[in-house]
Length: 428
Ligand SMILES: CC(=O)SCCNC(=O)CCNC(=O)[C@H](O)C(C)(C)COP(=O)(O)OP(=O)(O)OC[C@H]1O[C@@H](n2cnc3c(N)ncnc32)[C@H](O)[C@@H]1OP(=O)(O)O
Image 1: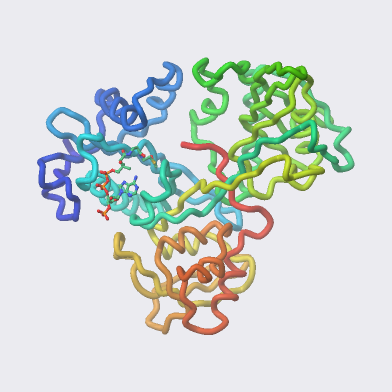
Image 2: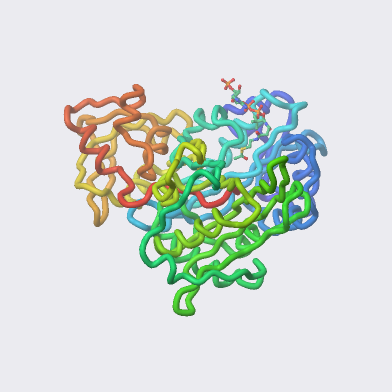
């Protein structure tokens, strides 16, 4: 097999070497075995056939690694070929690390480490400056240089107690029900217009539009099939919401729940019209919204945010695979000229000092022998990269060290995301 690399001969620190496993890219006819390993690592519950079929169709086999012990698959790790919006609006190639699992029979012997080693070498050789992932557990990926760069809000809104006050123009937006699949193209057009506006959003790759309208019975848990409402103004689609309704009847009457699955809107009035609709659905008293942007408008439209019970969660983890290319790919919201001393034990090609000069129009980032202004690890650089986590905040936690006085304030301001907080619209 062309891509085969036995972990014991790869010359890297992968503890899998000592018990004769081999690491190589997956062949299409091996997918069932690899997927079974993945499902088992996540508890062993079968997925619906349509879900399984979609993930099979989305798998990029030449970018999917599997570790074998004889003919048993004991490790899996994929890397989708995404493009990610960075501050300034550019769409940057990013390996979307996914489907990571190690068989419980082979855990804590370095199998994951061997896959991360090979994967980051591959991503570098493909010329992709970033790798990104969502973590099942935050403690896993820091050691490989990933930092939590975007966060999301999960909310359980008491819609009987938290009223919405909507902006002017909301009543000009017309809402209509549609079957999710029937309006998919119009919804995708809305999504596509939003992608460059917010760091962390993923350009839609072919086939991925199906994920949002996948509606397996097993996901419903007593709720309705996926419903969709589109928002229109002057005949143009300006937003949409997908959701389920779970009816409920308590001793005091109806108390159903609306479960939001997706909502995208092109402007504040369309956004408000959709949220007002979700708040007002008859016979419901709770709106569950998960994975929403931390700066989303509804939080400022509600009369009582406490009754929305918002909680914060880490979402997208970012790893700068090529520090120079990654820092050049984004813009900076204020002029900055700093020397960064980067620590990166897992990808030593990034180690050392880099001079970053940038402003809202663009940036350069080159190797330098000049003295450092700030010292930090690649993990902190990943956390700060999308502008949602402040370098100043990381310094307050002792994770960034200011060497030249004034450099921290300058860089912290420059790295901010500007208008919109980073947000990952869906898992992968
Ligand atoms: C992007 C994604 O797909 S996220 C999904 C990740 N997958 C899962 O959560 C499924 C269930 N878990 C698993 O399959 C495995 O336990 C994995 C993949 C998390 C870890 O695989 P392993 O092969 O056991 O990891 P490996 O032996 O290479 O461990 C490397 C280091 O990470 C540490 N580590 C591994 N898993 C964890 C964890 N869950 N929490 C904290 N530390 C961990 C190890 O202790 C080890 O530390 P050390 O270098 O200081 O000794």
